Amino acid sequence: MNEERIKKLASDLLFEPNEEVVLLTKQLLANIDHELEELDQLDLTGIKPMTHINERAIDFALLREDEPDLQYVIKKDDLLNNASDHDQDFVIMKKVI
Image 1: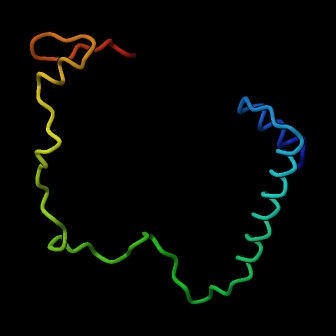
Image 2 (image 1 turned 60 degrees about the vertical axis):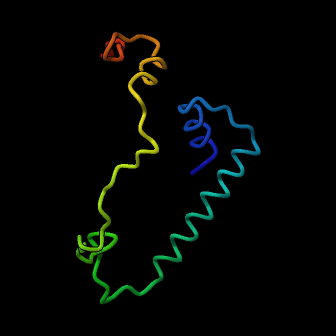
């Protein structure tokens, strides 16, 4: 990626990079390209592509039961008192479209 492209991208993202930042960005992109070229040199023949990070089936017997932690329960009165607008039972919010 050349310097003009980096500055255009930064401008599109509403950044105003100085020359030091542009130079650093070019160096980082060059390092990434170099490392990707090193990956291309790996011999991957006979290695099956993965479809998931962990391809083993999940054993649900090993998962814990969900149990509510009553330490974090918020009382209705505390919640309503903390809201900027509410009635007797509900928090009232502005409609957002």
